[in-house]
Image (tube, rainbow, N blue to C red; front, side, top):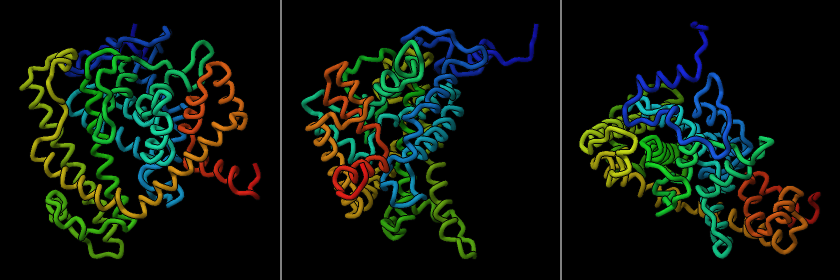
Length: 388
C-alpha cells in the first residue's frame, strides 16, 4: 500500500534507477563500524551528512582561518564558508555526472573537520611538535574527530559514519593535502565521489582565495594582467555604470572563473570515464590516474593562477606575519600544557589518565580550538592582568 512517504527503500531504488553505473549507491555501502538500525526515510549518506552538520567540530569551523585570521574581518572566508562552497561546487559536478550527491555532500562537509586554528600555519606547527609522537595532519585528525573525539551517542564514541564517508576524509588529496601513500585504514576503491570533492576543494580554494585577496587589497587586478584565464573572463564581463561596479565586476569575474573550471571538469571527466572503460564502482581502483580531472589546457591555465596566489598572496608579508604569529601562539600554548598538564580542562586531562598519551591529548585539545578561543587562552596565560 502506498503511504505517500518517501522511504529509505524508495530513495535507494531511485539511486539504482537514476545514478550512473559507476556511482556509489547507498544500498551498497560497506556500512558502519558499530551496527545501527538505519533510518526509515533517510539514506545512510543523508544521515551521515546530518550527523556532520550537528557535530561540534563542524560548528567550530565558523571561527577557523582560511587565509585571513578570523579577527581580520567578517567578510573573509572561514573554514565553514569554504566548506559550504566546496559542498555546493561538488554537488553541481556530481549531479552533472550522475554520481551520488548525498555522499559527495557528506564528504565535502566533513573534509576540513580536522583543521587546526590558524589554517596551514597551525597544522604545520602541530605537525612539527608531534613529529616524534605519532605526527599530525588534518586528514588523519579529521578521521579521529569523527571516529573518537565527537561525543554524541551512548554506545560508542564518534559519529559512526559510513565507510565511504570516512574513506573520503582520510583519502582527501589536493596540492595542499597530500594523500598518505599506502594508508589502508579505510579499505575500498577510490570512489569518483571522493575525487569530485578533491577537485571541488581546489576550485573553491583558488577562486575564493583570489576573491578575498582582491577584496583585502593584497592583490590587485593589475597583478592578474598576465594570467590568461583571468583576461579571458574579464573580457566577457560588462562593467555597469554605477558606484558599486567594481565589486559587481569582481564577483562576476570569480563566478565566471568557477563556471569555466566546473564545466571543464565535467566534460573532461566524462571523456576519461569512457576512455578508461569505467562501468562500475570497482573500475576506479584500476585507473592509473585520477578520473575526475581538469583538461591539460585548463590545468596549465590554473597553474599560472596558483603561482600568482602563492607568490603574491600566501607569501605576502602580512599573511606571513599572521602565520608566524599564529605558529608562536600554538607553540607556546603546547609547551605550557606540556610542562603542566594540570592546566588542561577536565575532559582533556581524563584522556591523559585513560590512555597515557599526553602529547596526543594536548594536540587534540589545541587542534579543536577556534582562532578566537586559542587567542583567548594565550591572553590568559601570558597577559598578567587577564582573568584566568
